[in-house]
Image (cartoon, rainbow, N blue to C red; front, side, top):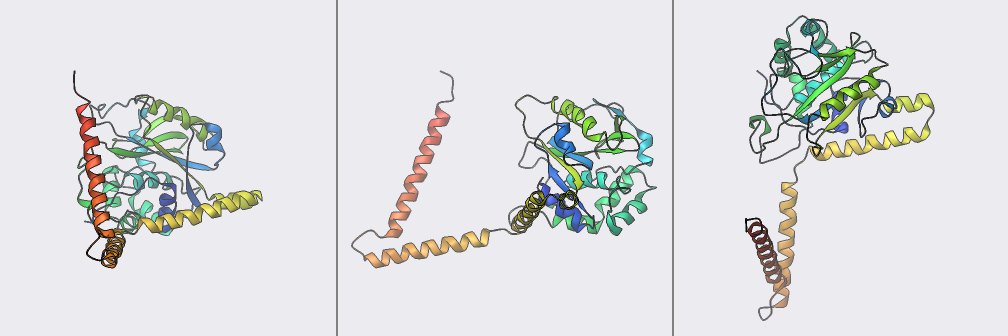
Length: 322
């Protein structure tokens, strides 16, 4: 059995370089800031979208009905659909649910192509187990996890330290249908007829209906489109400005991904040591008669702490019934 899966950030730069490291060619992810078909069309060609949302923890629909769309159990045998069998990997699984159903349009590379061929005749539950035990997919996924010396994400339970649970699902146009692929559901969910070109127009109403299930003040959603590498599109269009923006975006993504791989506890400790050393030096320089920089620093820290505690106490005291 493979090792654990770490939590990774819902970020276009993370997922773009994740699929690149898995061997996928000429593909990237774009964060969508508007539920607008025209805005989505600007990213064309759009291979699918992945949607992050707060997963409801109350009563769920039964396994034979869905709140929107219809289960298509036969489609499980004709497209790539895998049950989710592990925690922390639903983002990567949603992404693969799009890419492995777009092999006629996207060069997914040899490793993923072989994985799809190997799992093609398996039931969804076994596909999920095969994905969770793929050393390549797991290691690439984990390479984008934030480094923390305090928390082992592979051993963390779904509800530990956080009452909110979030989940990724995929929407993809395949087999002439708009399918919702959610590894926690028993089968793909069909949202009606849909060609590849119609996808931007038809997926937006589905997403809007999904969001409308939540209270009006719920804003914790994230939506990303899986699209063609925009640098290639810019070169094809002769758009120098767009190409420069996309190249700059890639530089920023690489920098941010590099920072995610490091924890700065050691660095912070060394900074604190230097500050203490400096303050002790100020104390020594002023002699025994006066209060040096070190004592002043400590006393100021104590005053700030007392002030915060007093303000916190006032905040709690003002919340009771009169």
